[in-house]
Image (cartoon, rainbow, N blue to C red; front, side, top):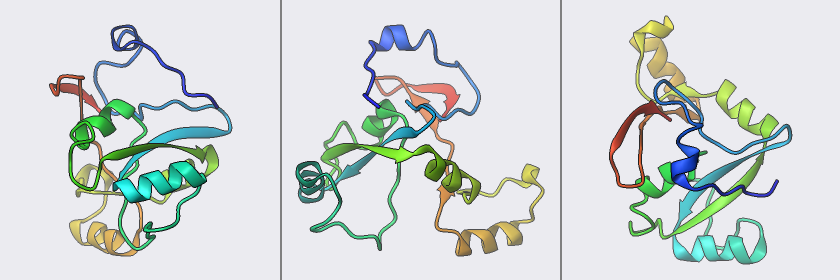
Length: 146
């Protein structure tokens, strides 16, 4: 899948204004997510088209389906250790599996689980789901959570 580019002023007309949404480009086969890395990790992956070198599976990593959200979180590539942003094409089945196995990053009693049950799930899960306020290109918070 080729990354489709649109001007922000055009794109916001299509995006929902509020609620919880996965903001991403996807099709039946894959979804594009973004990750920030240290320079040596990002450059190795871009050059070789796979992760290696200084990359480690032992650290937690955050994937963001929304490029603008990733750029907000990494300070537009200025935060130390987050200077390189990669667009990663994931199989849609894998992404859906991640969501099915995800545990909310904060306890929500409306989901019908006690705080203790949620804590147990957090300890045993390797996938977290976090709904953050989305932001516009200027850093302003939006009603939508992404």
